[in-house]
Image (cartoon, rainbow, N blue to C red; front, top):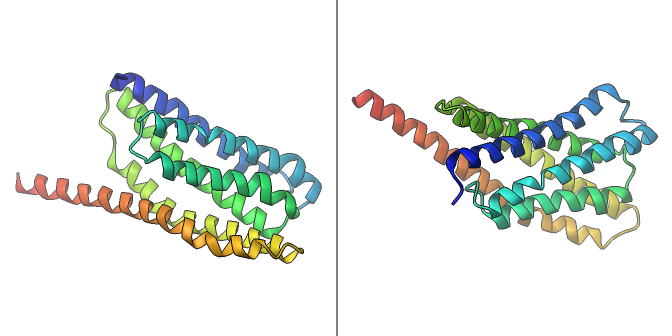
Length: 207
């Protein structure tokens, strides 16, 4: 059995690495003219692929039981994004608005999601009590960004379908089916978190 210290260390390193990878994508948006096809293909796409590859650490963490996330849902989430970028994105221009929007949403979600987890793990590793505000930020921001990114993915599929690939219209129709369980998981996590905060607050008042 992995000791709590080692567990938090791996979670801190893994989540921090993923957060930094997505911050690099955001930095590319800020510093490069990604609306130019050549710049997008040579700078944004490689950074995005790298960030998606690094995000695979989340799958490993769930399989090893380091997090409470269900492996099959984490795999669905990660594989969907990887397939969109590696298989679908090459079918449309890199600087297509649908692609830039989708990657931008992924990039914004990354630092909030994994950054909050990394800070939480670091505080626990150093012997401090984790601050509820950290998870509150994560569970407030992610439910807002995630559907925006998923919508962008679906519109990427539709864009590719319009370019002479009618079979992709069927794929686009499946997007809500895959989106629903992931969104519900996120909302359930948010609900449980704020219920725990409310219960703790009530207990503190009663004492």
